[in-house]
Length: 193
View 1: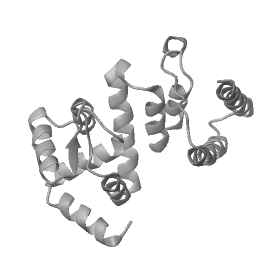
View 2 (view 1 turned 120 degrees about the vertical axis):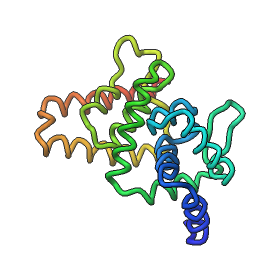
View 3 (view 1 turned 90 degrees about the vertical axis):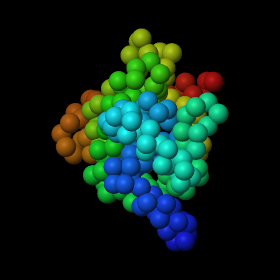
View 4 (view 1 turned 180 degrees about the vertical axis):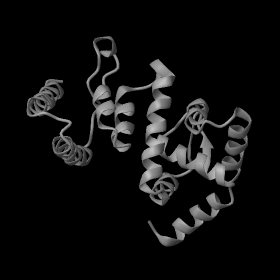
């Protein structure tokens, strides 16, 4: 990211109050196009405070309202810059808060999104709960189609995740084999499409 672009984005965000900057960071962690309700749940702010923050972010062209009523960053670089500015502890905290808010939201959320946020929060056991759908969640699979680049990144993260679980004693050998078997089964399902 060019330094001048980074400085422009950070200059715009620094004009916000400290609580508004934290709310904007939460929006960055949520990901693409979030509803106002989800954003408010993640931040825990009152409706009045959330509306004030939203209006400031819209006025500074940090966020835009989409045709479907959701909000997103005016440009993807804004999100990326804001995320890079967060310390690892803040990122993990926000990812956990997003996962919890998605769970509270209920049927509107995707299992894969919840799993992603728990993985980013380094909360491995809850992440596993949302990687394997329950019988009642068959219509909400945690899978989607990934590009080759995304698959490479996910494979690397997955190997690191398994190594961490084994090293911490949270994953017995038989469970590791089960996870690998499930990954191959998913891969075969994808290929049969």
